Length: 211
Length: 234
Image (cartoon, rainbow over all chains, first blue to last red; front, side, top):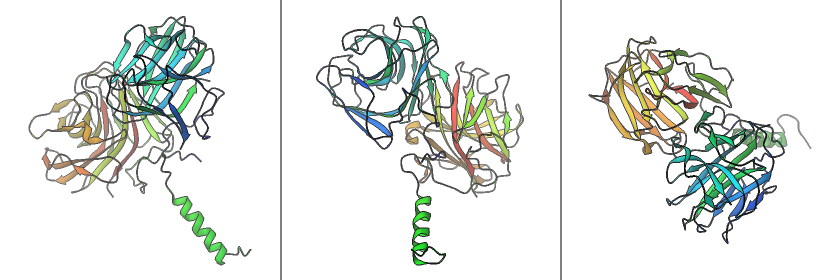
């Protein structure tokens, strides 16, 4: 039963690639694990709670992906909380990619870098190389400790845009149109301690793709 | 089974289902339940009504009431210090307070603010106001006098507190009128326990309107205020 008075995000009808993490079984996702570190995922209490033990190569991403080729103006959306030690550079957010093999392919990522207090839209290669620095970075100005709402939109022809929201109802463009050279065939989300040796936690309320 | 009204089994079942219905979902409860008064709003009827909008200049925020929030998007822009407010007529009595729970998002710009307001009118360009709000860019809460919904009077009794006293995610604020131009500001982490963060402050205002506001304070980028509830002390 959803208590709409106090629900964290708007009610929606889950599609094939959506997940509200409410069946206590984390399934349907392809994990891209970088190196020997393997996060622990616990689906309970209507979240996917993902614990990364810390460590791993600098810039490596740990991602959970679904096969889907976005059309122009499709977007993906996520609501999550983060927890962890204050270390450079814990990150968590959304990802579109052209494959799910570590060390290959290109990824467009839009994420919260909570050590830096930024949201960033940028290019990755091989799930392990931050290839283009900051693109369309913006200072993260959502009240601390909140549920984070992010949306990553594919606008076709290597163009992407990132949005933020406090509630999943209203959205604002936080990046402008940015260019990442990739035609995505996979969608998902990720976390990384970005070489930090201490654990980091991402607790995901929902992931969804535009209908 | 004897399920007739008044039977022992009937009483047990009634007690069980009554207690279950009164349970609060610990996963998602954001604030304590309260009985909604005439000037209160839980934004739960999908229609944003009963508020007088004070719009400053040509910028007009978009308000969407859905999912039990009033989600307000300001497009950005407008002159520095202008406020965009939503007000109700009410002559505030001594020791009355107003209270709000909301979330906020924007890019970083000088000086996004959103919070509570008491005023003696609803005409842009006139009257006096007292505001209490986080100033996100400054990482402070501002508790200060305004005039005309467009002029900040940050001197004198203006009080600033660190934003991190506000705690997590949903921001809970309370502003109290103590009579004879005296006001006090509180913060909470949950809407249950409240802490005085200002002491008694003096602002020259006899409030006849209560409400809330947001402003980019001249910043050119949009901002969003998502209000869970507004209420006035009984």
